[in-house]
View 1 (cartoon, one colour):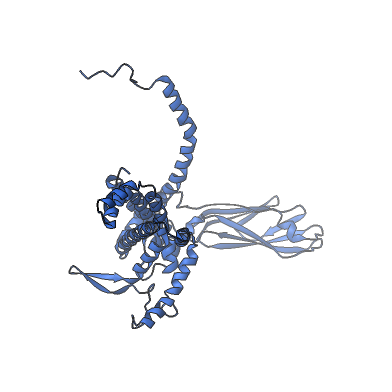
View 2 (cartoon, rainbow, N blue to C red):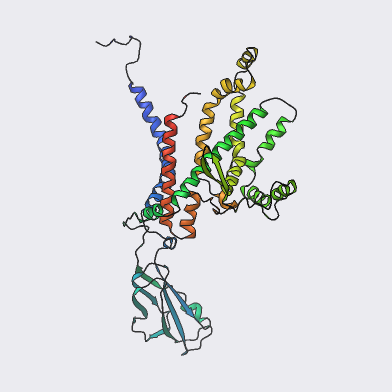
Length: 429
């Protein structure tokens, strides 16, 4: 028999606790629902579009549009003028079926039409065009005769808006699904290179930002004159507008007029200008017998990524370091521990959790980064990542379905990374 709990120990949730729990859920339920909708709806919409053959032009659903053009102002009694109706299909790639329009004549105006597609009944004009191909337009000319003088015939005739009908297939709302977008993405010759580029950019950009942040935190953890000024200065890359710092780097690295190339030339370090942002490869490196291509443009944007986002890591790491008890450092110094040993055996274990959290956040943010690479290279010279590919598929190639499919791949990669991270990351800190 299992031992019985002490007489004073609680044996379950009582009625009061249950009522409090129900009240808490009732009060927090709307907040949870709103947050879930904000997060889930865009995600579900992306999955929906990824399984449909949607082009950028499909954002405008097929619909008929009628314009009425009248030329004439002052009209005497018994005079006539011509009214031109133009019916067009607004969709550039979807046909319309059953297109019609109706318009009524103002009082005192008699209409006459010879177009066989149109009929007149009790002063009401009705025209049927059947099916309209994408971008197609049809014109109908109607003669209007005025029984009395009119000062502004155009305003009188255009006072009533024509009523249109017509239906077309909208791929955004239809129930036709396909995997062609994913086949197009995975069968593309450059997909795996783009995926590998994204991983390299994310891993080294994240690691560089953490390493620089850790170095800056170790440097500014010591008290010295001007430390507050340096702390503020170190925040500049992170708080400065990305368009400003990206343009500055592009200017400094310009192969013809950039300051860095001028300095390297004066030092005799290079034989000619180096196109840091436009040159894919700068040769090969022999690492343990393996020939590895040194990707110059990708390395440059990785350095920019590490420089721009190290201040965030610096702030978190410095805050954690200043909360560590200094007594153990004093004891370790008395025992003869070197500064490196103090850092490795005392500081680093204390920083493991914050470093893991920073690595998770920076990995996700860097993998989703678009503006930095797009502003500096536009994805050229071997710097095209999955996020840039989303833009190129959806906007440059006008294929929203393929762009959404690439976005789903981004989501799957980040989900897999998060699951692995939470499985092996430090649980205490």
